Length: 142
Image 1 (cartoon, rainbow, N blue to C red):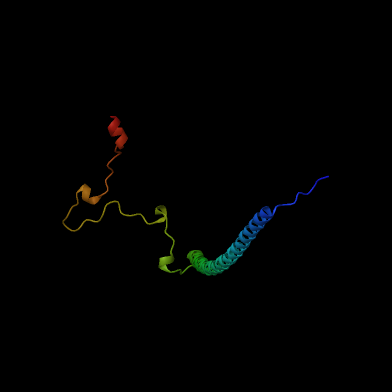
Image 2: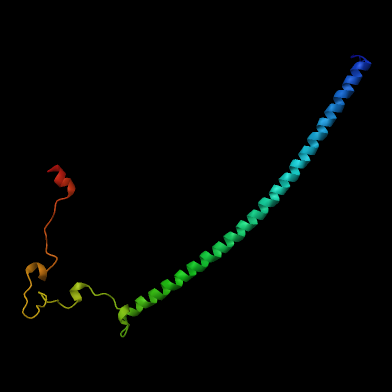
């Protein structure tokens, strides 16, 4: 069996003071916790509003992107239609397909000579074959 020892009056007062201080600390902590919860709710509201704004901007951006993609698809469709129309007789000149060199008319072997003037070989063909030139690596190594 345990026996209960009565507390002295001084011990009782000290215990009462400590309980009073403890309850004041608990009260202060409770108020601070409530303030933090209110601030947190305010931050959540601001974040929610910002997220709604961002979602609205993203939606507008998405709509703009969809519009641009739609415009691009329409342009590509027009180009494809124009390219398919190249095989039609009577297609406009700027829509004519480029013919490979083998199918084009043969060009004269030498350029036309103006009356009384003869062209030197360099003037007749300004792009003479100069032959192969060594690369810089070959020049350094040699």
